[in-house]
Length: 490
Ligand code: AMP
Ligand code: ZN
Image (cartoon, rainbow, N blue to C red):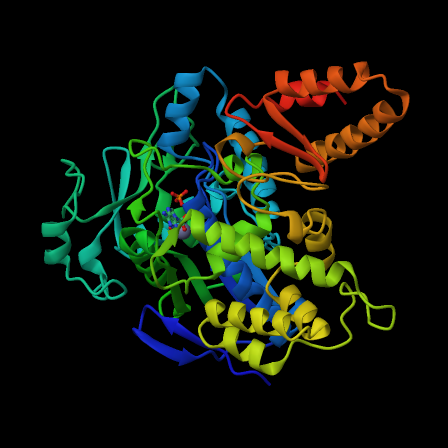
């Protein structure tokens, strides 16, 4: 059996992974707060833990892994979004949840086994808070309930901070009702306009941290294997989850392994709206970047290192995936079709992933199998990593490598990228290449160029530069490219 090793934030060591129950390996990953589109950074933990989920399923069997990822659908950012847009909270969270699921499916992430919404678990949260008050780990004050950090001597162990360091370093909300400035909210009062639930402390709503403690307890029990999320969640969110869960269920242990992915940057800079380098997963998909390319680039950097999203990496990923699609697009009759690989992934490939998810090594093995034309090994490895050979053929084989370059397209091919190419539908443009070629042949034969001129004029009006030469037809979208106009010509 494969030995999986994972870096555990709690012990700061890479450890052999020994499941509590190999029949049911359990993992919880903190999910999104649903008020807007997922940005590119949000996709990183989803893809990283999706690879881990796939690896665990491969090693322990698909029916022996339980993966939970929540949706935080009660939050002040959601309330603010509802107030500014005039839409209802339910409408916003339902719409954003579906966006998230669609966007993450596009980058090849499997849906977790459970995707609990916080608002469906409020009674469980209230019960847990009552238990914490009864054990004197929490206290009610002015409609709030606070966790008393000094009641838990391990507080700060995950992130390696003392309570004094935390007070000095953190921007803590000082409230007159707090005994210690680090005490954090388990429950807070809601006014008539804010969502609220009845509770022993009046009408109110849960704090963010208690959600994950209550949902993980409900769905995975008081002791489970892996807890994950981005490293921005380590403090205070995960520290607080540990305090709540361990105090509510003394001696249980909560999560054995804590895993944190590093942050994503864009071209060496923090992604931010003011720098103009902030984009959502949907922005990229709409610009014609296939989800597989996003996934490939994400996996090219180890999850514990900061990841830099660059145009160069995107191009390289696209080239590699295109080559793979080409190889699979023309399978010899004697070879198995890639979607049904006859072999398991090579052990060296599984071992790369099992070594604390060394996805960059896994991708270099993929490139090796590609170079050596080891189709079965390639197909099986790709599938374990969440790439489906058939989908690659569908998405990437349509454009021929020999005619593909960054500048423009010739013959049967079209430009895929560049400012002007964003959002374009490659297949639509390809249709026009074939149509132009056909109309031109007819025009040459009939000596009637009216139809050809009309088609060229319509393409130009849609912002597509048309170049015709003896060797073929080149279409190049310009800055004024308007895909809608192009579609209307179909
Ligand atoms: P949020 O909705 O902000 O709570 O984030 C959802 C998930 O995305 C959390 O696991 C965060 O740690 C993660 N995340 C947020 N920003 C980034 C980023 N720039 N790079 C990687 N992960 C991120
Ligand atoms: Zn959480």
